[in-house]
Length: 129
Image (tube, one colour):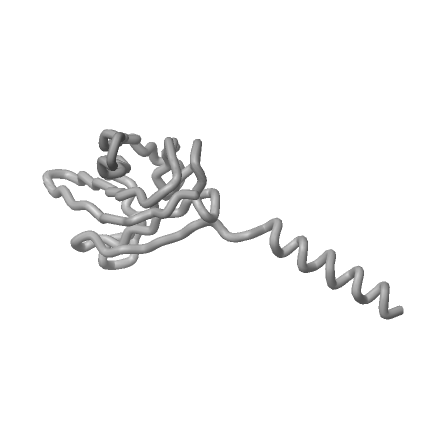
């Protein structure tokens, strides 16, 4: 009986590891609350799917903005700076894009939001493995 209980416990623990949560970070950008989710936690070298949820100060989803995600890594000895941009497309109430990190390390990430004649941005630092 103890072996059966132990086996069931191990299966539940492994299942919990298999369904780990997405990488998620939230910041304020002017009147907006910006939540960035990446499908891998931690984000990894190569393709990562990102979703950006934007809420106004009343908590309502913002679905009429132009959103882009810029991500960069500063120059290092023997290597130039890297800078990339992905335009996000609205899917439901979130903006979706794909980020392709070329190497591991700390990436400066900026979500740029343009809505009407108002522009704002949210800055994040994402550690890629």
